[in-house]
Image (cartoon, rainbow, N blue to C red; front, side, top):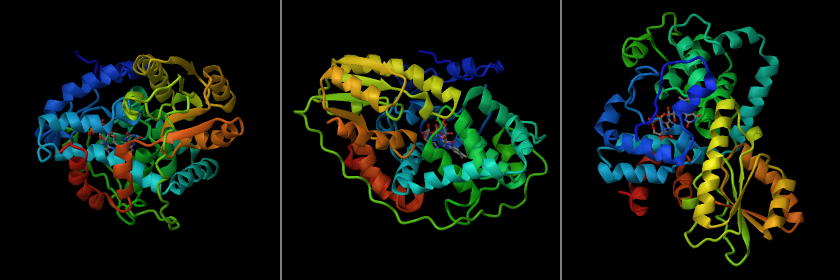
Length: 413
Ligand SMILES: Cc1cc2nc3c(=O)[nH]c(=O)nc-3n(C[C@H](O)[C@H](O)[C@H](O)COP(=O)(O)OP(=O)(O)OC[C@H]3O[C@@H](n4cnc5c(N)ncnc54)[C@H](O)[C@@H]3O)c2cc1C
């Protein structure tokens, strides 16, 4: 299958987004199959180059599919390692595991997400230069590259990793704009908008994540890795780390829940994990499946459109895999779930674990309300997350040391 990739800019954001990331597992698998032969040396050598939105690229552009788990980290790495040795594909495997690492890191320190939200709200109210934010978001600063990436983000819902780093660095250190408003701009436009990867990457550029270590975008680096498309002048020459109050102690991961197979259950699917087939044991039975993609729990129109359309795809797959009736709902509230459970005659709702973010917050609020109606809400964490997340206690360097052993334990290397 030949995949629609980045086409010319149309100026019409949503159709462009649809053509960039067709929202189905089938398209994700096809994109993965196309990418796998280049996951070794080609990726390692070309991954830092951003040749432009309509140009071939060495990167996979799988992020939207991985973020919503239309495909999983496990299967992406399994397919790559079926074609390459771990040594040859080490860079790509590590990049995929950056995603796992960030999720684990935030899961152990959920207050950092809350801190971001508070900081964003405070800066939205207090920041005196609203005009400067609008100018930056519209790509009207006059800074070569930066303005193009601002427009590319809004038009396509995607930016190359290096462009995200340059953009965040210029936002914080050249334009001296509040980092949390830049992170919010990304959340509102990225299709792969993700609590952990986005917040912690912005913190990393700002020098908050690895305390004191910042990322400085330079003219030479941008010119080299954009094949000379951009060579912005007047960039900050130094990046002085931002500071903050110390982060509290790490919390432990919640115990893995045990499913009572004898208890009739309904499956609840949200945009946090869209491949239910691999989230549960093959023998697991469900009396009904509820696909709840709530637009209010996503930030931007592109992400809402992607997740909403993918909802149709997961409903069809869940019905065929689990052999049960499937209902799609657009709200994520207690009454909807109680009614759906009563209709299906179940007293247990099972859902793939939702990591730190709006869905997890919604589930935490719903659980006691459902419990009062005699309905248990059980979140099941994937073995992948249980294996990796506990090691996200320090920096990526120490996490990375564990990767080969954990992949081996999981039969992947
Ligand atoms: C400021 C900033 C904000 C970001 N915000 C997000 C976000 O909201 N959502 C998101 O998914 N990624 C985010 N990233 C990480 C990264 O830029 C994207 O995942 C990557 O560009 C996606 O392109 P790709 O699929 O072609 O990546 P590839 O290079 O092909 O990598 C394969 C996969 O590995 C993972 N990955 C690669 N690099 C990273 C990374 N640095 N951090 C975490 N995971 C990574 C992604 O799942 C990606 O799909 C951000 C990075 C920065 C610097």
